[in-house]
Image (cartoon, rainbow, N blue to C red):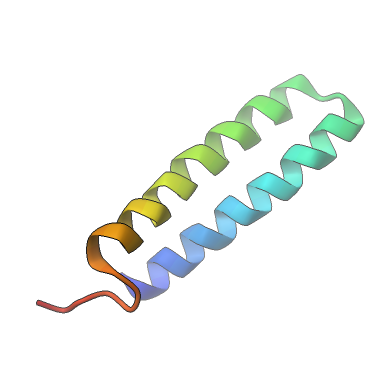
Length: 59
């Protein structure tokens, strides 16, 4: 779960970067998808850290 959480955090960070690039290009569909991706993956990472801590507890 530890490595998966790091990968999901990277996906969320890349989605935020893509959001700003999509705003610069005025691409509405890319803005929608990047916001949705950042929200979903970011929420998963935040709730995993709050629930299990970092590094995650094994028991």
